[in-house]
Length: 112
Image 1 (cartoon, helix red, strand yellow):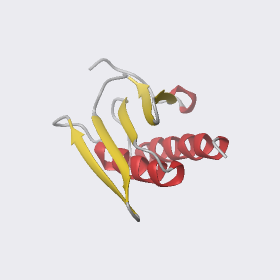
Image 2: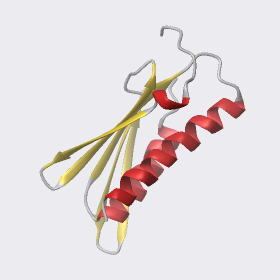
Image 3: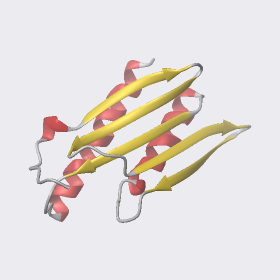
Image 4: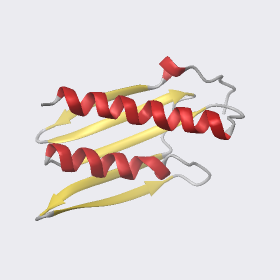
C-alpha cells in the first residue's frame, strides 16, 4: 500500500440504507477493504459474522461495531472497514480506534 500519514479528520463513516438494512463504510488513510462484519437481531440476541482479508486488522473492531449498531438500531448492519496508515505506534492505533468509535457513537446518537 502507499504511504499515508495519520490525520484525525481523515477517517470517514458513510451510512448507506439498503432496504431495511444498513451498510456502514468506515475508511481512512489508504482506503481499502480489510474486513466486513454483519450483525443481525435473532430473538433476544444479536449475532455477528466477520470476514477478514489476511494480514489486515480491521476485524478486531468491525465486529464489535456491527454488534453495537445492530443492537441499537434493531436491524441488520454490515460494517465494511479499511483503514491504513504506515508505521502507526500503539498510541496511534488507539487514537484510530477511539476516532472510529467516536464517529460510530455520533452516528448512532443522530438516529434517535
